[in-house]
Length: 420
Image 1 (tube, one colour):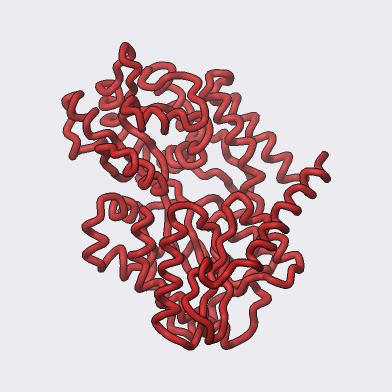
Image 2 (spheres, helix red, strand yellow; image 1 turned 180 degrees about the vertical axis):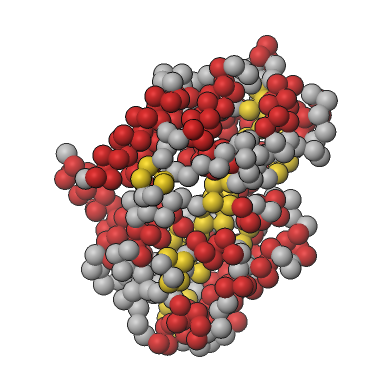
C-alpha cells in the first residue's frame, strides 16, 4: 500500500515536472527572449500567482541582461516536485521558493546553496530585511535563504457584529480577558451566532502553537518533543474551554466550518492567515484585521511561516548567481505588488518605508507581528513529528480526550518517531 501511494505521488509530481517543462514564456511571466535565463519555481497557484508573475514580467522588462522564467507548480504537488528534481531530474530550477518550516529538511541534506558568499558579493544585506525573517534562513551560521515574506496568524473580526453587540469596531480585543469578554457578548445561541468558532482541524497548526508560545512554551526542548509541558496543557485547556465552559463556540466544528460561519456573519472573530483576505473581500464583508490578541499568559508571540528564495546547491554558474542576486535585489524594492495579495513583504523598503504600504488595511497589521513571530522548531522532520500533535489536539477539542492525556499521547508518539 505504501509503495502504491509513493508511486502515485511520484507520478503526480512527474506530471507536474512535465507540465513545467512545457510552460511557455508568456505563462511564466517572461516578456521576451534574450539574456541569461534563470528558471524560477514557486508554489503560488492561488490569488498570489498573478502578483508574482507581474513582478517577474516587470523585472524582465527593466533590463536585458537576464531573463527570469517563472514556473508555478500547484501547492499540493510542490514539494513532491522539488524532491524529484533534487533526486536527479535534469530540469531542476536555478531559484525556488521554500517555506521557512521546510528549510532545515533540505539544508541538512546539503541540497541548498549556502548563499552567504552570493549575498556578500552582490550587496544583498541582512539589515534590509526583517530580522526575524532573515534569521529564519540562518542555519548553523550559514545563510540558506533570502526572505520574501512572513505570514503569521492574524485576527479577523466582523465590524457589524461588534457594533450590534455594543462593542467598538475600532478597538478589537488585545488580551485573553478582553477576548473572552467580547466573545461572550458576541454569542447568541438562539440565533446560532458565536463570538469565536473554535476550529478542530486546520488552521490549528497556527492557532494552538500561538497560544503555546504566548505561554512561554517550547514545542521541542533539548531536541525532544515537549508537547505535554504545563504551557502546552494550559493552551489546549484554554481553547477547549471556549467550547465547553465559556460556550462561545459550537462543538464539533468540521473542516472550514469557522470560515463558513464567518462568511455568513455568524462567527464574530476568526484566527487565520493573511491569505484569507481575498475571500473576505469577494464576499463583501465589513471586517477588521488586527494582530492576534495575547491569549496566552506570559508574552506576545504568534506562530508564523514564510516564503523564502533558495538556490539549489547544484547551481554553480557565476553568471546565473549574479542574475539571481540582481533579481532578488529588484524584488526587495518592488514587492508592493506582492503586498496586494494580502501578504506583508519582509523587505524593510516596503513594510517600514513605503507610504502606500502603510495605508493598506491588512498588511501593516501583519507586519506589526514580525518582531515577535515564531517559526516551527528547527528540526529536519517537523512535518512528521508534529502530526501526532495535531491529531491529539483535534481529539481534545472534540471533547474526546482530556488535554493532558491527549498531549501525553502526542508526546509519546512523537518520541517514537524521533527514535526510529
